Image (tube, rainbow, N blue to C red; front, side, top):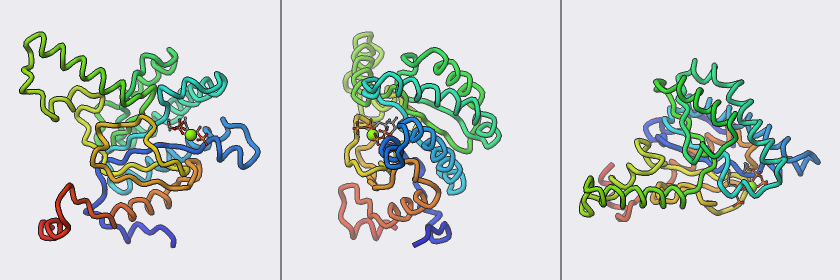
Length: 250
Ligand code: IPE
Ligand code: IPE
Ligand code: MG
């Protein structure tokens, strides 16, 4: 069935969609190409997903672009990924800005090569007042590190008398994460068939709908995104309640 935007319920578009963009390497290998060829093709998918998100009215997109574990890859792949990032920002920031896209990051971006860090900082500064869509790139990101750091900060605040242990509730703790001020994703999409979270947004995904598709990331384009939203809209999000309660709350 062809993806059709008119079949979507525009009142039920997720506000925040997160992506584990997986399968660039396998996609490239399938065509006898080098892994970096797949990563470059993946950038085109990112562009198309951003465009489609704007069309649908999604407000936040989080894209897992580089995990702390990805440093273990061969150095030429890591270098290639970093160069792609710098090039993509240089090539896309004007259009992003013109379209009202705000760039944001999560993860330890200071640990990235200097030129990546600088280009991210300047693109974030330039787009910081934009309001149509927030694009959050997860770079040098580890959910466990994020949670651990928040725990250390909470401990320090309590020790300094700036917070009492009783005040440390879920909301306060959320405010100590990289994702503070960003609502939790309603939908997580992982491409390329693996059914795991790979150290991504462990706190924030606690009630997110998870969608795993066999499509490799470079093939994940507008139609695939619309299909994923349609699948999301068929789900009943019960949050611990029973179906009848959800129906009457509607
Ligand atoms: C995802 O594609 C991109 C990054 C992790 C940067 P992969 O590079 O993981 O592709 P596969 O999983 O090896 O096919
Ligand atoms: C997860 O993909 C990280 C990113 C998409 C950036 P990986 O390909 O690195 O994950 P694993 O190794 O299959 O868990
Ligand atoms: Mg992978």
